[in-house]
Image (cartoon, rainbow, N blue to C red; front, side, top):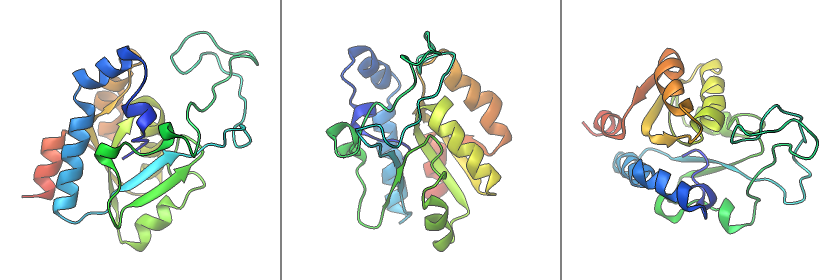
Length: 195
């Protein structure tokens, strides 16, 4: 459940609310969680946990901002949007962790980078991850690349992932992820879990 946070799943921007609703993202995530819980799988919640003073963030010069608009100077560096301890940085209540689930605080896009996610998976004997959330072209992509390089099997749940940046979502789901693992809908993934 990558960055399944209030700030992302319950945005203030009406356009983003409509975007998520049109794609059924939250209901699809809920259906996935129901399937996972039905068979007793552990759910992991890699979630941004950034310091509000910016002390764990590096100001990088980039060519664009996160929405692919103008960027590249010291006044328009990409910065975290939500900070630990805020309501926006809490897991959305509709997909909140249950007893035994694992919250994984992260400070970079990749869920494995300097977190204990790899350890948490390996001590449980887990060799395949099923991933959903957003953004497909940012955190999901960097986590899937890392999982593949760590020799995990990967299932990306296509109708529970999203990116509002052009055709990036479709590009990753059809051109990139199929070469790294499996791409399935919620229904397909749940059917495999609950035959």
